[in-house]
Structure formats: structure tokens, C-alpha cells
Length: 241
Image 1: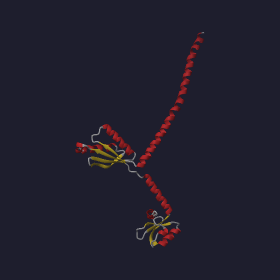
Image 2 (image 1 turned 180 degrees about the vertical axis):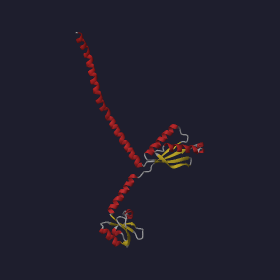
Image 3 (image 1 turned 120 degrees about the vertical axis):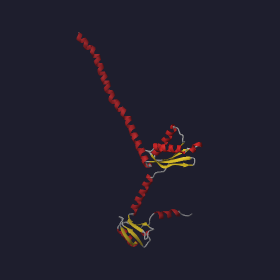
């Protein structure tokens, strides 16, 4: 059974040659801080790398002679992996949502469709808006153009026209792009969700505290007034006697 030959080959291609794997007579050497050392024999470059406790890394193998740099290869690989990870984390997963409209759409349906577009753009997704023409409507493309222009203006705060309206067979198509990146939209949604949860927690606690503070003084005041009213006739009787 043959072994995994191709993956091993890809592994060797993806990583630069370092130290003793650099099999050329001479290299154009670059110092650890980017300074140009010049063309030196590879043996001398390896000696300089060993003295500085660094690696000799071939960074431009196709150059003549190849360019090699003195660096900490382990640190270089770690930083490169972290950058790649961060790039994947912040990468916008391009998702295109589609909304279909008729050129003579009524106000209620238009509001509903526009709400969908707003939701998609707020989430950081692109929106493909398609105007579907039927029958004689195909002779009135300006109706679709005006409708798409109106929609673009209504959602201008959340998206921009990435692809202008154009005829696509019997339909007219426009693509709207979000003004916020996917990662920014998700972060904003998380913040809004956390703020709403905190507001609900504060609101749930506030009425109970207020009721306990206000109710007690009102009851005591009413009792004192009632006692004064009951004692008043007794005082008048004593005066008459």
C-alpha cells in the first residue's frame, strides 16, 4: 500500500529551507534587523547564524543568488501561525442573501422586503435584490431601476451599492454590500444583547426596592391622622364639663 507521498511533498514546499538544508554555494545575506550583509558563502552565513544563536532561513529561493535571512525560525513560525489564525478569525464569510421584488410592489410588501434587507445588512451579509418582470412589464425597465434606486437610498446607512442595477435576462439585479464587516456586526449584536440583558436585570430589581421604601411611610401617616380624629371629640367633652 503506497504511503502518503503527496502531503509530504507539499509540506516540504510550504516551508522554507533552513540551515543545513540550504544547499547552494553562496547566498545574499540579510541580518536579523533587515540590514543588507551582502553575498557570502553559505558556510560563512551558517557560522554567523550559529554565533548569533539564530537560524539561516532561505526567504527568496528563486533569486540569484538566493536570499537568506538570520532569524529565530521557531519564533517566526509561531508569529506567522498567529497572523494566519487572526486572519481566519476576522475573515468575512461572504454570504449573499437574495430578495425578490415585483416592479409594481405595494407599500406593505415593500416595507416587509426592506425590513429583510435591513436585517441582512445589519448582520454583515450582502444582499442580491432581483426585480422580476413579467409580460408587458419587460418593456418598462425604468420601473425596476427606480425601485432599486429607492431601496438603495432607504438602506444607505447600512449598505452601499456594490453592483449597480443591470439587466439579467428578464430580471434586473442589484447587489448591496454591508457597511460593516461581519465580525463588527457580530460584535455589535453581542454588545446590544448584553446591554439589553443588563437593562432587564436592573428593571426587574428596581420596582421591588421602591415599593418597600414608599409604602411604609404612607401607612404610618394614615394611622397617626386616624388617632387624632378619634381623640378630638374626647377633648371637646372635657372642655364642656
